[in-house]
Image (tube, rainbow, N blue to C red; front, side):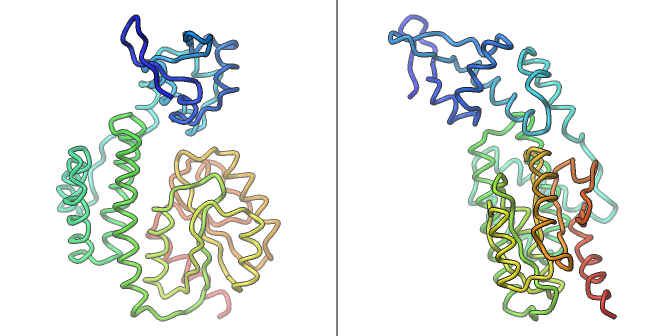
Length: 314
């Protein structure tokens, strides 16, 4: 429950509200308080911890950095200005679009502007128009991939709120699902049979839908399972559906240990002939490519991997 301090008029949050808002557990908050001297809660009339808004906002930044791989001992005690500087170092600076794609830039900039002005109907309409004019393949690789990166970077820098990122995700999800439905009407069902999902800790579905659309363009038979699937259930589904490939998507916020440990465990659970394709923005995939896993660093490389798979038996 949110509180309002009678003395200062400053908005206060209970420890339960902070846990819900930041994703940082109550026990962790108490440990940090003792170990690092932050957060520094006050007390209400019942002796319960209360946290001012400034501390909650700092905790949100800390959670972003933890998700990006930083350790609590490195960052919790730092001033908020230093934390903001670190978040800026995590994201790529402005990049020139490849030659031939300069015309996409105005769509990217207008999409970000519409998101910030909460013009969701305008954003949805613009994206649908882009699919119609560019085709699904170009829309995904040339527009949506850089747009996702821009939104993710803006979130890391706290330039957009969590709810705005969620609204964007739902908007893009709807556009992609409609595009996939249109592809399913005329795409032949050919091998490989690809099961698409994410690990239990990964709730982001946009990358998975982007991969599904690219696989369908290549004529693959797609078996989407949604997000947050337990590893044992992935293995069972592979056998039941006779899948040839498991395609997984990892966002930049996923804990690197969850990525590597989960991939190693899944590799042991699956038959050796079933391939694992891992993609997304998780940096650990590029730094430490797991054994027995094909890392797809760019959506455009899906076509190459599909052709390689099909050429195995020729």
